[in-house]
Length: 259
Image (tube, rainbow, N blue to C red; front, side):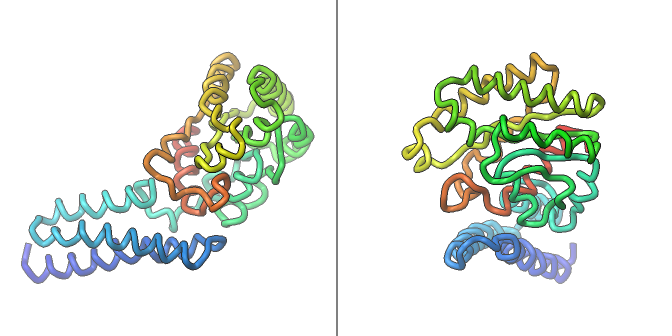
């Protein structure tokens, strides 16, 4: 590679890799504080500058690999999610759940036709949504419930599973030809567990959910890997999720459902 071309690529790469994540953070973090956004920008920029500084010593293929590694590390996905039309990808799907699912609409990743969710939703009161499902006629239904239900059932995991099965059965009756996917209960931060010790049983609940899915012959989607070594996906309350979580989550759902 000519020296001039390589220098141009390095310069262009520095601009894209160092500053684009910062811009993405600002664009999607509409509900985060300015201070929080600036802290994340600084952290990501410092980390990426250190990784870029060594690129002058490497060839083109090595540079491309390193840039891709930075993008994967930051976004949790190997794609420029800003350009992905999730509304089109999930146009024949519905995602059911509570306020965590609502974030998909709040941050404009999906339109209202693909979401049946609201704050406080649980397994029992969500049965009333089966008629809405009938009207929409989705080919695939994703469910994310648990945090509100854990407050209700406490240590009684069996009762939780009983009511989850009941909801799944109702959905199957309404949509006998549709595929159903059960999402694992998402983790919460430690301060939330301190206030509500029942959330220390999330792994226990998920273990039983996985068994239930096996018994019902439906797909269990474990998204706990998205939170490994990443404590920046939650809002300040330690429960709700920041915008950058949602494209990584949708990518995982898309992969599991072969969309």
